[in-house]
Each structure stands twice: as structure tokens, then as C-alpha cells.
Length: 249
Image (cartoon, rainbow, N blue to C red; front, side, top):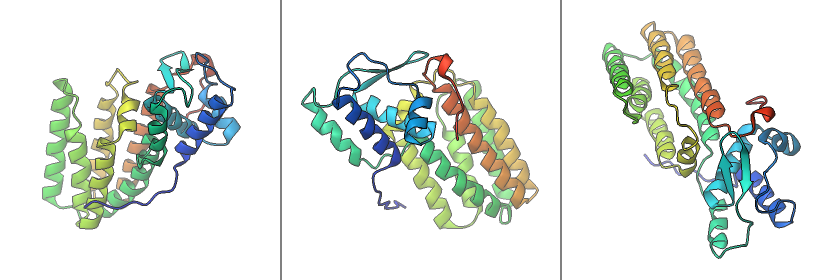
């Protein structure tokens, strides 16, 4: 099921365009460091996650360079190369910001987990256990795929016994896997030990489903994706440590 999603300009794109305008106006020059994310977020009245997504957009377009532990630096100004006109069309891209996507999954999947707790079967529980075993083996052998993780979430959606909900989850994961922004975010993350935390989260979700507890399943799934958001945000931070602040408003 390929859901047609009609979008207006996304918030991270608006922030990215505002930063481009500041570059074009002479406020920033090549080699300058952008203000810390926290400062930009406070000035423009958005969350740091939106600013992070805007920076990723500018990074993909070649306007900025991200240096871990140092900050974001201007590589070139809008209009300096012939490729800029083509890159500016990316503003119309349907790519979803990685944290925006996670927030959508948090809302939708927590409710699906709650619904699944009322419909889950013994076979579903068996499949979920097998999926966790495969996920654990993958991590222990150093594989970098997310097959077990994806399978776990798909099985929960299927356990709802509602094909529309199942299709929605598959579409969200498809958008994640085809997202240049999601891939760019992960280039900043070199230590993947955090993925072991997801196993513990998945165990808690499975336990709630075994108990046929809608509230427990909803809360466990919500907290799991919250942990994913917070961890990925923290690990992908590039600002000078002296500027570290709150993660999400």
C-alpha cells in the first residue's frame, strides 16, 4: 500500500530556507560557523530537532559542513554554483525529517500496540519472540541491518488484525529506508551499541502484549520510540559541548 501524502512545505524546510536567506544576505560568509542549534531554535521559535533537520537539509545540498564536536560551517553560499538551482528544487522534496518521522511513528505505533494487545494470538507472540532472537543474533555478530527491528514492529501491526494499520506501518518504514535525511543523520553516529537498548524496550513491549494489556503496550511502545528519539538526537549532536542544552522542548 503506497499512501499518497500531500504536503505543504515542511517546517524544517522553512528553517533551512531562512538560513539560506541569511547566507545570501551576507550575514554569514564561507568558513563561518553557524550559531549553535539551541540559539537558532530559541530565535526562530522552533525545537532543536527541527533545526537539526534543517541543517541536514543544508548539508545534503552542499551548503554546510558538519564537524563533530565543533559545529556547522558554511561551505558555499546559495547561488555560487550552477548546481544551486537544482539543489533549491529540493525544497519541494517529500522527504520527511527523521525526528518528525519518529514522532509520527510514536503516535501511531503506540496506539496500534494498544489495539494489538486486545487481538494478539499465541502465534503472534511466538513470532515476536523469534524476531527478538534474530535481532539479538544480528547485534552479537556485528551485522548492521535492521531486519529484526523492522520485523518486530511489523508483527505487532499485523497482530492488530487490521490490514490498513499494518499497511500504514510498512509505509512509514519505507519512507525511513528511502530517506536521504535519515541516512545522513546516521553518518554522524559511529557507535551503535545503543541498539542493545532497543532489545530491552522490545522485551517490555512483548511482555505487555503477553499480558494482553492495552495500556501497558501503549506506554511501552511510546517510551521505546521516545528513547529512540532522545538517543539519536544526543548521538548526532555536533555542537561544541559548551553549547549543549535541552534536547527537546
